[in-house]
Length: 460
Image (cartoon, rainbow, N blue to C red; front, side, top):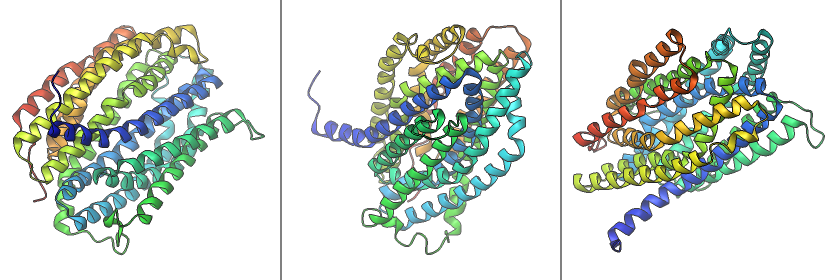
């Protein structure tokens, strides 16, 4: 292999500077999530199932916030590439207002519909006492978790703007601080150490909510104290006026992303509900496998974010089409190749991870099989994830809506529903049939990227 040119070295250094802090933050976050999961799992399988169901519901809110602010984030990246501080300030305000609105709506919705939503994950084939216990633990956990919706949304506004303007280290530091607080409080509150009461699943929720406020405090205080590095924050709160033309453009670009993330996250919840028809053991096994998979997938998830940031900045700076295409191809290849490695490691260690949970042998065996399937499909997940962020970086939000949310509801959900309701197919082939659709989706993504219509500057 020949020596990299100076230009190539500069490119990969830029990719590394953007990606590495995100990888570190996501890696620590997912590792602590794994430890949290194990801690709750030590209390019992029923408690773990209740927490897993509620986390799936909260995940819908989190992705709605992500999708709602991502529309403004596209403009933030390109405004940064265009060195337009006032434009960045307006997009930041837009994110704050959206965060406030979505948090209020989320709290009202979960209070009104929480019990009904949890009930949909409880199959009638389970023992009545297990179903009642799972519902009770789930509702206890949910009521505390609602206190964390607002700080999550506001921290997302700050952190997203910092990432899109090239400040990735700060959010990494805030995330690390938050997850350490979360982990320590989990240890103290779940099990009742150091004289604290033994709170179980409620303790896990209190720890998570506290960590949300810690993350918001770190990222917001740093931003305001370093106004010279972040000029958009100067005067950001003097007024919440956003130019009507810009607000309209953000809404037009961002609405498909909000709808997409809502559809995708609800689709994932429905998918897991379809899996849950095979029993509470399946709920526990899917929870274990998905938690471990998230830890292994931090590289491609972080690379996807980096693709969106770097492509947005290059497009905002009116970089040539050839350079943009070349940079995008190299980043996607890097993401897929890394997942060939991490997928292999995950498969090799698939039988080890489930043993650390205090659960039955059947749940452990089932988790191992699901982990192997996920590991096999990881490179395809990496490609579709990078393709999604590539299309989004150029403002192709309606295309990403078709590629992601519409695909889930027209292909994945109907297949999962039909197989779970109208066949007796066991969970392992059912899981493989549904997850294997990622191969088809990656082909669709390749065709969309090949067209090149995403290569456009939208802030000129």
